[in-house]
Length: 296
Image: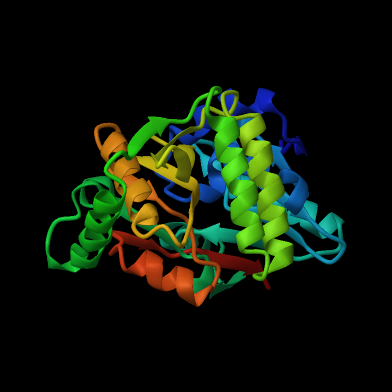
């Protein structure tokens, strides 16, 4: 039976054990990501019967993640449908993969309609490609990196730890002030979530690094393991006026991750044109389609 409850750090081992049993590549399910955004999206989690499901409850809608795990997929969807019905809503399953959407349609023919929104497709890259940046298609990236290395010959990479994470937080405060002319609501939410992530960095098992140049932190990035093949990069910050800083932190993180992960998921672009161009310019190995299934 489903057992939705407020997400706590105690849920982490069980959630990760369930995800290790499946081939999910979406950062939507990474435990640390779910935990740090839980207050923004009012999420709850169910980890019963070897199935992980995340719930989003509003007055007008009952939406749930597509069930993940080795339990009874069809039975879980029937229970979710009943729960949504008790609340006077139709069942809404968000973020299904193409294979999951096909499975739902096969198990429940003509019961669900399906929709997609490219703004929330996720960009998944071969870690080896990001680490090497080889070939003509990465020529511009290498030029930016070369400029950075010329301008800052003293640059260093450091893994984020309790001694330097405060400097990342300080950099993020300055970054926020420099970008406050942008979407204030979204930036404020992300700012609060990032601070929460830093506060629970070790407990959530995050891994990341920073670039230091001229004695100051100019870029940082961190995320977490999703499964045996995929690392999710949740945050990446760099100063826009430091040429090559974004390219450097991206490459240096990939170089540290490529021995352990085939893929690095850098999440979606949320429909932002500049972010979409930047993510596409790194030539993803997979543009992960996410499909919504809505009960008719």
